[in-house]
Length: 230
Image (cartoon, rainbow, N blue to C red):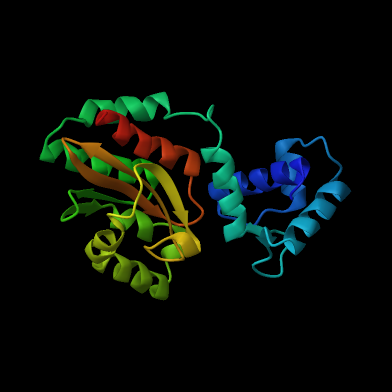
């Protein structure tokens, strides 16, 4: 079990890393977030978090980066919080101004969500009717700028229809988050998706991105889609 203080520190590390894409040091936590904890205590807690597998040191610097199990814990906290924040008002206004129930508006909505999420979006209507957009957003992320990562992502996009066909029937209705090893689109990615029913048939809407994604925002974005078909 992780203590509440370490859980708070881990959530702060994740939020900082999502924003900056830089390894997070104890000094940054103390100075930037005005923590009511001594620097020595923060250092000790971070050492324990590293020993427990929640953060790691990517190279010889003072900073640490969240691991897959850290994101798993963070997401469990988000999805288990019934009072979590919804979509930002400005985002909702943008999407409301676009959304209509026709093919052109669906494509425009998907593109807008891909931009807001900084990721790639797929929308599978009835299992065999697939639209996806926003690949350039993935390649703009620091994690995917190396040639090998570009090849990995491109391979996933090429196989997207096959992957969705494989998982479509097994997905439960509602929003869900698939991280790393649990993600059928690739263990180097995370997926936030929702399966919903409309006119007696199911569709799946999802956002693909790095594990370092804004899970709060992306979950709210897929929930926006779900509500539009309720």
